[in-house]
Image: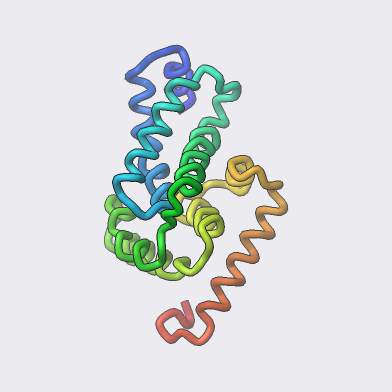
Length: 178
């Protein structure tokens, strides 16, 4: 991956294209967890990719590419949200969750659908953080850099989010003993 990033920084368009294809699913999941309209999500991702391409030479540390491009995406989503107030509701999120899991096997799809149903009540930032942490497997360090949150503070926040989820599930027969 580092070689692709280096080639892309040096102006290799094919390397950049391959690099983006590695990140598109992650970008989609994050954008979709924040924005409800599919066309808006596509526009935001396209804008993110264009912005990343134009500013790639400003990336100082290639190890930070993941958090760098995700930060661009989240900033684009935030700007869109401020301008349009089009947050993804729980119903939209669950209804459109097939888009989020299209490249997974049946067991993974069922687990992801359960996960999406479970986190639907969270606010946008919490939902994004927990999605990045559990579905996209970002590290707390990467998420902290993206949201500009100290890593230990983020771990505490993830713990609080898990507690919110546990409380919301308490007494629900369909999720007991899982």
